[in-house]
Image 1 (cartoon, rainbow, N blue to C red):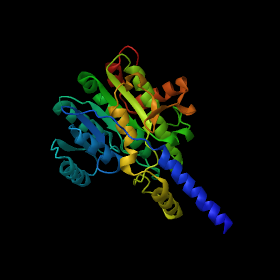
Image 2: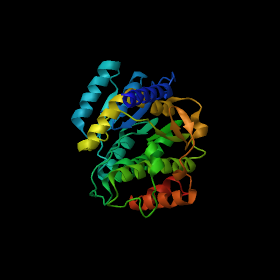
Image 3: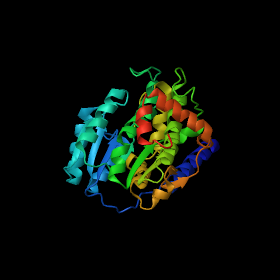
Image 4: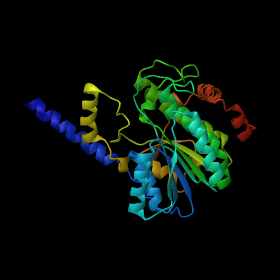
Length: 320
């Protein structure tokens, strides 16, 4: 009985800690006349992010794989905000062809792009290779967002005062990615997820250096532990344990969207381009993300695997 009471007290204290550390985006910035694109915007923190952008008057592009769910999300956002300038575009991150298609669509049909949020991701799915020859989890979480961003960088630069947000994770702390393992088949799903999230941080740092001197800033972040279905592929007792932890201690999607919103909207963050944020605060990089030589090797391997050397050279001719 004493042990049980002690355990309950510990759980309560942990709950209090989690509640106390939560921070909210307090920016009052209006987005009238602005255009934003959010990947994976039909559910979870992506939906909450898109909803907030719509509330602020932005033209919101929901880039999603499931068009039915995306249409439902669009209708709900319009109903809640009375902002009818919300559109759905198909994006399947497991297909680089789909990435290129939506990028060309945006370039041809959108006059501007003020905010790009690379939010969509998947966690702990079985190992397999995509039609593009990339490990599926790495492609969805890392390679495809990199390619999408590269294609849209020029539009972001022409728009001016624009931002790129890469949603990462604290699990990047446990990653150990190199140029040789960035597309390794056979790693455990959790290890691969960690590597993909470290990739997001490495990409953010590299892109910030490439964009230095421009009016485009880029940030990565850990949204917190969220009550979303990103780990829907968990099975058995893992799924049961995750359910208990999620419902007791994890953030709601609205709470989880706050750091994304902060990095997208907070004024004066430009000097922190390339940095990593947690709970609406700039935080030190994980040690795994601070080896500049290794990070450059990972970047070069990424560009090669994506077969976009020419695009990168054209965008950044002096320092790529």
